[in-house]
Image 1 (cartoon, rainbow, N blue to C red):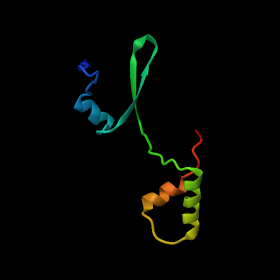
Image 2: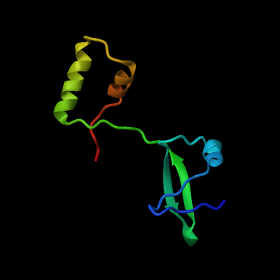
Image 3: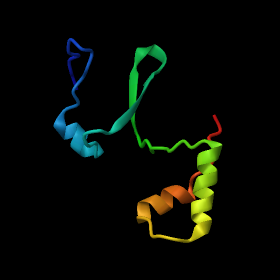
Length: 87
């Protein structure tokens, strides 16, 4: 399949290819240059993260333990997985 690089350095993947791979607008691709100069693109999923300071984690822990109020399911799931940033 022949494609062209535009003046901004962008490429367009043909619609049929995007459809067959299930790629939607905003999808992320990991680009690798392999031996011989071939370019390899692999679809990847990027999960957003929330970074909290120790003080923020303490407040989150306090809120969890208080048991008051009702939070949306997505927030409860995010809070369940929250922890200190290892970086």
